[in-house]
Length: 367
Image (cartoon, rainbow, N blue to C red; front, side):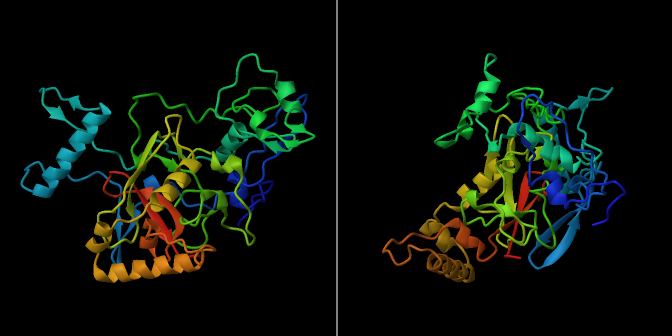
């Protein structure tokens, strides 16, 4: 990785995640980390690039661009797309009328609503705010801080003779010694139109990597509590602060994951929605992915698949059972959705779906 003079010499994953400096003294004002001057080695914003979409055994580059509008209206496919854009624009409340009174609908631009890429350090800044390391104890509680809270008393209560008590820390506590809330991520407003997927930037932990190890080691078949950093040689559990970083910029309250990359059976059998009215965090996606693929497959679903897929899924199911400690206990469980993925059970990130309707989840083998 190239190093600029005076720049940050850490690996990129340490710039947006990893270790967080502790706050050991409330009398010392918080000082943010120096601005990183190292050129980012992560790929440019996905929304400004063509999306790599794999169908069957061949790749095709499908740009996120303005759909062609045939003024003659003779192409049924074009008419269908035009109607789709009109519905989307009306949904967002952005339909306009021209001078003659006829209705026209704009189409999305090829560029993201954010022209510049979010600096790596700003993702980490939110982790500092949402889950500060206070006196060596990482705490984050879901409720808002009362106005009359005794911050020093809360600070002193984190450690006691019976151990650490991170649950006593109240998330969102404001103090000069604590990291402030980054101004970039605004709290979502109820009923406000959301940006489209191609208008968002994904957290680096969630970006699709075409090659090499990902920033996150996420076996979809295992509980998300087992998550580890993916670009290091040793298994280091991912920190709580990194789990509750924003999943996107700007914040989204809903993300519809409706496709699996390289899946020849279309459409995706089990699309699912990720929700958080306060703004979706990375852990919301990890938990939703795990819970979706933990569901059992019904017999009718199983017998609807091609015979070749049935055989492959059955092999994956038996391999999963043989790796479990309870496979000799007499307990027999059924085929789960994760078995449908075979040995492609490693999460490799997300991309906007080229059909403009959601997100594609990519999976792969252990690198």
